[in-house]
Image (tube, rainbow, N blue to C red; front, side, top):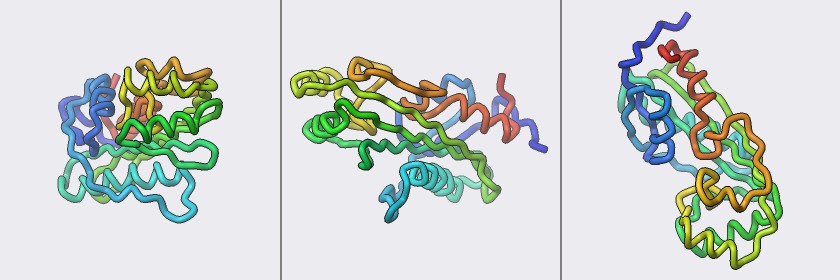
Length: 198
């Protein structure tokens, strides 16, 4: 049986992502951020969901090793479209190419979460969001890239912002999953671990 953890206990978010930090604040759980230096290179023939799960756990474990005795939350998102893995582009031209690739197609976003304490077995979850992109013209993709640079996002768009205009449909159990941290799953993992949450 889990021990009830006080709401004042501090959690470590193993991420430097401002999006994940902003999302986690919504659960009113005290936390600090500590980015994990993890090799995110996919393994040979690794499925997108397996890659996301492996990296979320690897990030949490990396921080748990240097912050013993603390609860650590790791998360990772992988986007796949037409058999290709799409990561953060880091640049305008690459983002435009990525959006052109997804035009008129479905992209699937796998967002994994892992919560652990030292060497104990991790609590894990996976959120899957399917995004159907409209048929996008080059001009509108370029206008979007200039209006809302999303070079630090997998898929190069922000559904919580102007990027919603690029979509024909979004299928998800949790809209926060697409942004980078599925709060429904995260709340469930914290509760399983004994966190005192509403």
